[in-house]
Length: 254
Image (cartoon, rainbow, N blue to C red; front, side):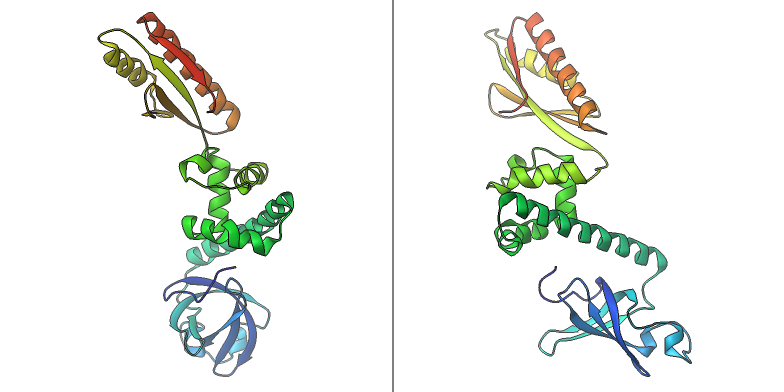
C-alpha cells in the first residue's frame, strides 16, 4: 500500500463506489482507500447520455490523476485519458504488486515478525528504492548479491532473497564470484589485465575489488547456466594466469 496521495499524471487503480448523474466516486485501491472523483466529462469521449453505459458500481478501472488537493482530500481523475495499452500495463503492475504483498507476508512469517513491523523496518525503504515492492522482489530474484551491492543490512535480507527466488521468475539472473590473482613478475599487472580482458564476454563482466581480488559477474537465463559460466570463466582465468607464472584462487562467495 502506498503512502500519502498520488501525483498528478499518475495512473491509479480504482474501484467504483457510487455513480451520480454528474460523475462517479471511486476508492483508490493502492492508496489505502482514499476517495477520488471522475467527472462525467472525463468518463468517456463524446456526449454521454447514460453514464451507466460506461461505468458501473464495483468495477475496477484505471484512471489518470488530473488534480490533487491534499488539504481538502480531493483527487480528480479521468477515465477517458487512459488508452488501452496504458490500462493493460497498469493492471499487470497492480497484479504484480498484489502478489508482492503476499510474498512480503511470507517474508514476515519466516522472520517471525509482524507485517507492519517489517514494512517499517525495510519494506517502505525497498519501495522507495525500487519504485514498487514487486520490483524489489524481481531484483532479488535476479541478483543474489543484492544485499552486498545495495548495502542492505539485517536478518531480513537472506529471507527476502530466498522468497524472491522461490516465487519470482526473472528475465535473467546475476551471480558473482572472486578470483585472487598474485604474481611477482615485473610485468604482472599486464598479465592480470590480459587474462581478465580475455575472460570477459557479453555475459561476463569483471571488476577490480581491491588487490588481489577481482569480482566476476555473470548474467544468464537461469542459475544453473550462470553457475556453469562462472565456473568455466574462473577455471579459464586460473589456467591462463598460472601459465604466466602467477598464482590464482577462486572463491564462489566471500
